[in-house]
Image 1 (cartoon, rainbow, N blue to C red):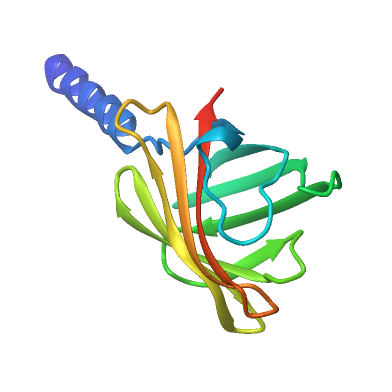
Image 2: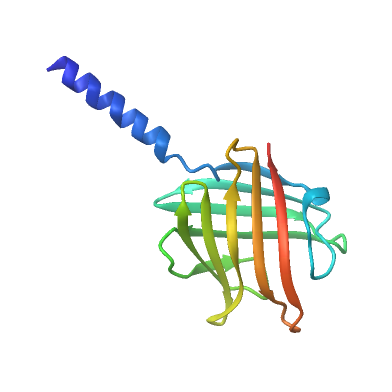
Length: 152
């Protein structure tokens, strides 16, 4: 009986390790590796991701291209449903869907209309987060960005 309980406990811990979300942690914007097609890149940003019930909470703070501080955040499950997005005037909801263990897809909307879609992927070594997004700005300019973050 003890062996069975130990095995169950072991496999339960292994399952928890396998289920850990690699997005969780603190990430710093790598401006040099990022490619921004629409406007200038942010000067700096730190993204903190914490695990939530079947999803993630993301908080981003930084300084934009004009030198103004910004703060944005959301908490969302990986179920494809819309969740509130705070801090960005052109976006009011985010929907996430898990693609694989290291990647989610995202759709950002304003007033129910898709503004930007893309993916957020963690490298196999867990040290780099790459966000690719496509869409249009409020003025109709194309967005085709690759934003790279380094794990802290």
